[in-house]
Length: 425
Image (tube, rainbow, N blue to C red; front, side, top):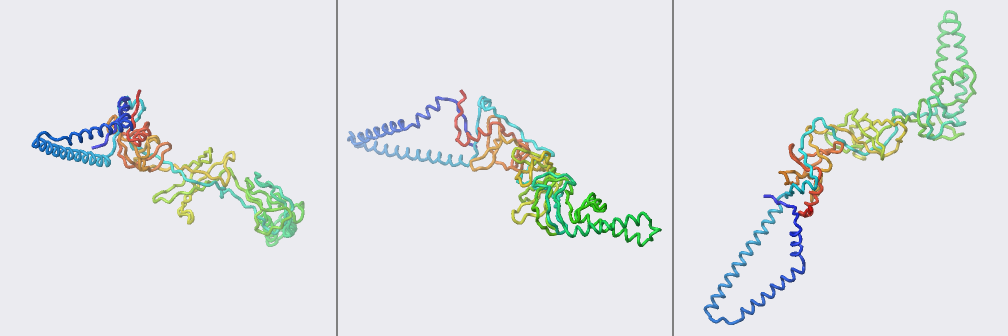
């Protein structure tokens, strides 16, 4: 047995209910009963013309009163029990065809979807692409003479960063110039003329000093200038190893820097990373190459997963997933907070419904309105198991079930108001 709520359209019925429930009617009715009770008591105090008749009437009155009390008690108990039973039964809302048309009610049949994908949205932070980041250090103890690059500047490969001075560089420049001259003479004379050993010694010394110059950060043009004797002793310039943005430049002019100190940090912002944090979930696997959409405010950029962690962060207890994000036009910058929408494979034969079909029950659970037959709608609690674009994956309901999409919110409102009447004038 199910509790059925019908939506009535009669204004007369509503007016009658309002009149019956008004305080004025209640007072008149109470007064009428009170007057009737007084009249009954007056008749009871009048002497009976015949004792036997009075005695019979008295017994008949007691018997009628007892029977009436028992009947009233039985009916009240029956009604109370009925209310208790109905409280445990589901409610079915009934609508006429006219009411369904007025509400523009729409119903769909749930069918499983094959090869569907669901969307998992998690928080993330935009970071530099560590594979396209360069730290330009000072290789030998040096003093900064002048700087060329500034913070936030985009440098091309070979652009100057700063000019420095170092006594060690002055010694290297002298040794390299001598070695270069000696190697040119020996190489011109040939191995047979100078002998094999002298030839190898000159070649080895030159190549060793040239490699040391590269290790100090000099490019081919600077080395060529040293070999030609056109460089200023002890003075050298460090240049950008590749295209990039100056992200850090923690140095000042005139400052002495020890070997290994960072001069600048360059980052190629044409591609950045979005470091996403996934909640721990058994069986959740994010494969490399999974499509992802990185959302920052009103900006949305498509990327893909390039790395998925296998160990939880000991502090946040989340799993790290790294997404590569193209950054054409430099719309994104490291340090921004974002959301990452991952496109994952949905469960096999997943059932999906539009967002409009979902409502909340009285206890806060998600529910759908099932069409048992045309015009009869019953709320059924379900569980959500992911999202497919603008649709949600649901479980706890069978395929082939007909559910309400458009108009479900109205049905939930009527359910919450215990069957508020629809006035279809």
